[in-house]
Length: 372
Image (tube, rainbow, N blue to C red; front, side, top):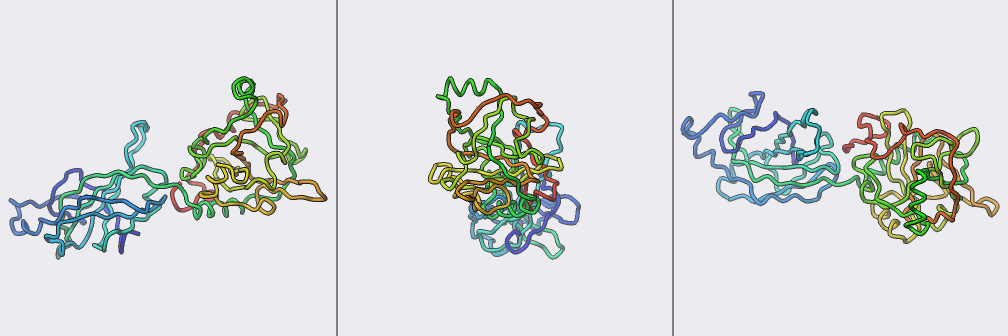
């Protein structure tokens, strides 16, 4: 939605300047000038937008306003907004470029809201320019010169968007299976480095960019990655891993207990039939807990569809969802002395690694209608 009305037309012309713009030609074509059409010379002098301001930015919307000279202001019937993704210098030169988006809006009071998940993606840099227009009786537009070009970046998913993802993940989570440990696979050199340089304590690091493009934890949340899924027939962790042949195992209650909070972080797939759910465990009151509290939906640790912790007969009992692969991020350091490190007997399945994995934007199971 763009103000009162929004229409997509052909990609905008590259040249700047005032003139006549025909929406019927199949392209944004500038046809008039003062020498050729002196009858409209005065009408073409529409005010040029300047001092553009972008505010209230979300993952799929923003508000835009600008200043204009009062001269001929009452003749403005429409605004043209030229919106483009900012060019990435590292982009694949063989990939098709994104088609520029020209938005046409009726001249509503400013600021006006530009909203649309079909042309706005989360956490993406855009350029925007504006011109004023006056619709003529023949259907053509008299337009002003373009404003200056400004840049802005859309925001991450909000809690509202993440709750939508959460609800989609709940649908396929499946029944709950028991677990007793969290585990983390790495190469032997990783654990040697932790012992030698970090006093035996694994340190949180910034999460990579795997998963949803709009995830507020990617590139921002610091934590330690753990797995918790078990094999259906044994009730134990699988012997294969994509991340290394050495595994640190720790009793579940040492990371996940009533003194920790649990948050939903993401739901995604990598062009495969199975799906991943990212959960965050943060000790109550820790910096990680404060970060998540502001950005992520919090889960009831005793009652949710993914990972639960409850007391039965004085003993803590843990369950995980069977039909999704859980990626658990713990936000505090973890000392190796709290668990054990041993070599696995299975294979290192590199093809299953999710490091910086890109989400399948076409999957109907794990996408919501606010970009990817």
